[in-house]
Image 1: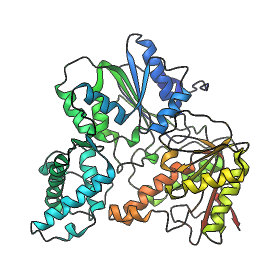
Image 2: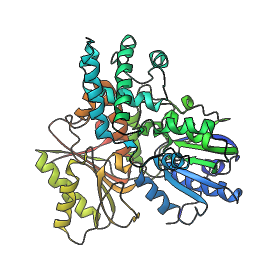
Image 3: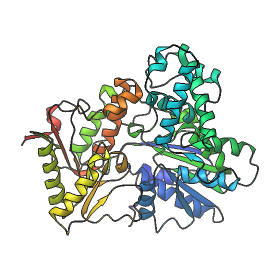
Image 4: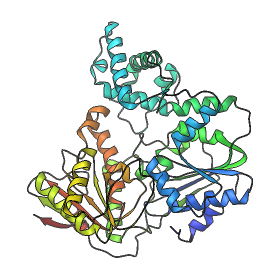
Length: 468
């Protein structure tokens, strides 16, 4: 796959100085990923004996980046953050086999820790909240590198509903967290996925050996926690560089965490406002979503310039029932997938297997693939990719179909329960919907039955409405 030539501000950023911190904030479709690849390649070639690291958040993106930059990245390693972290800790003798607690077991151990604290005789309404709420709180602690009770009590909760866990009740949450850490150790685990970065930070502070990478470039950096970003800064060699490419409107992991809290100190912040991916109709809808109250408090949002490319309005289809929605999604995906690269995306994975089976049954010659972390090779030929909004992060499709945009699906009810706040869940889910919408280059179809999600803007001029 050949990369487009950088233009305008893209070219300026590509050739920025090779030392220190660089922060680039861009709107969806502004070419951040392309310039991340080209900058990593440029930096590695400029220092011929130095390897560069291009790091992103998930395995699907690693496959995508490798496909996009296969001709450019001969001296660049491409890894997810957790691949990098495990590799580094292993090189320091700090990564045993099966040392990381998986999320499902983490929930079980947190639930046990919560019961232990209750059994100590504490009577408090906070302790009556579900274990999922404590998992979210512990994730927040770990992702922000909070290592003491006093630090936790004093911490400002940017973007979080303060009434969820009042400051005066944080000592009880800290007790649950400490009990969780003890149980995790008893069960044979040294880390979980959320505190792995803190272990990397701690190790780098005592590691005086030469750094493996002089230059580190981060794609989709808005989803990296402050501790992840700090660890990557520590991983950079002396007189090296760290380049951050992100779009805060697409921050779907964590809670409105600013790159500033990670200690990045660029001489200036660069902005990519040109949208090269979407038609103006899709871009207008994306912009309208980002201007809803659900994005209130999100720092560093970049407002895009309207694209020149014209296209049809996003189609909003009201269906009689869920079965009608499902059949319509399959029909559209099958028809468009013969000549276009199509994303059939849902909020949850529950329908993936069914969609794939039915699409193949409709047309055995149709290319149908599951969009997940096990993709080994990226092929942008016509066909249908089936996956979640999460799995489509940073990717792009000729057409995107988004079924089940109902108010009982968006926001996801389990997220409301876990976060303990409908307002916070809506803000998180609105960013996720923004990601899904902005994956579409020219064609975008929504379906719903019952009541339409309130996460979509109500302005009727943004859609072509149909009823089937």
